[in-house]
Length: 110
Image (cartoon, rainbow, N blue to C red; front, top):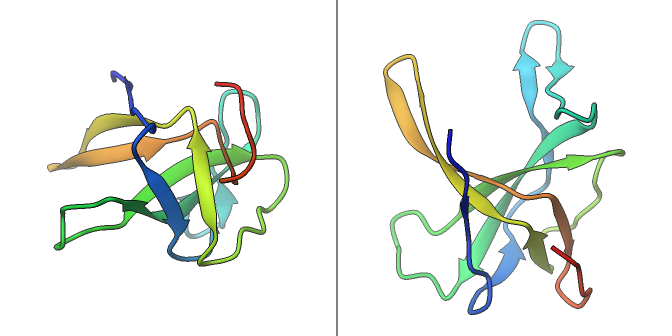
């Protein structure tokens, strides 16, 4: 699977919903982990400007040591945002990952 870096220089992101744990097994509630053992979460983000009126929100997966408390409506920056193509069980789509989600005012190195 190839990760494609996303150029964020002309984009701003607003949180469009609360973060949720990425679940491996719905029966047990087990949360998926990254290679470093951190829990993975998803968060819906509204990129601006956005020309796609049909589906303006993207869902970004990111790791966190603790359950993230990122309120809806705040501006954030997904550090190290990349896109990837996935295919599973006859379905396919475009996914997004970030190294972290930080407040828009914070300068991050990535």
